[in-house]
Length: 152
Image (tube, rainbow, N blue to C red; front, top):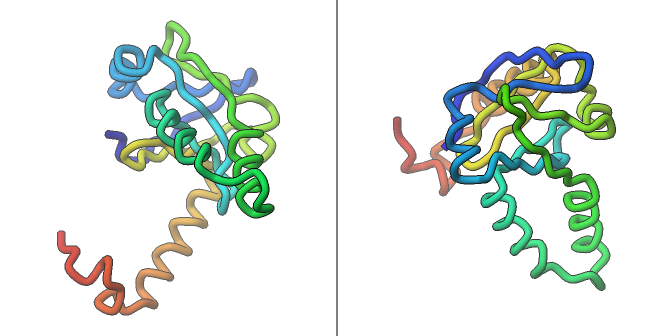
């Protein structure tokens, strides 16, 4: 499971280093392969270990090619999906089109979300966090049936 946010510098070739604590598991459990695609709602990238992505693909197979919304959804996720291999230094190359989508340059944030990572441009991540905090503080969490019994 992936958790935490890591500030990572992207090099001139578009490479980022996956944090060392995740490298062995990615190599052993997922053959060192991750799938990178675009997020459907935010200007960030989603990075899935191979086996997690295979579960996403199974769900995508169930969507119709004749229903325009479902087809567009499939096209967006699958059309941008790129297989990437960890190199011997634990780095992956973010393809140029995906870097452009998320406005990635040098300063990035890699955020663990249990079964996947999000990759953000650093200032976009900070803005998203600020917006999220505003949203959380403006809502009555007890009125949300999925959060009402959630405690820390």
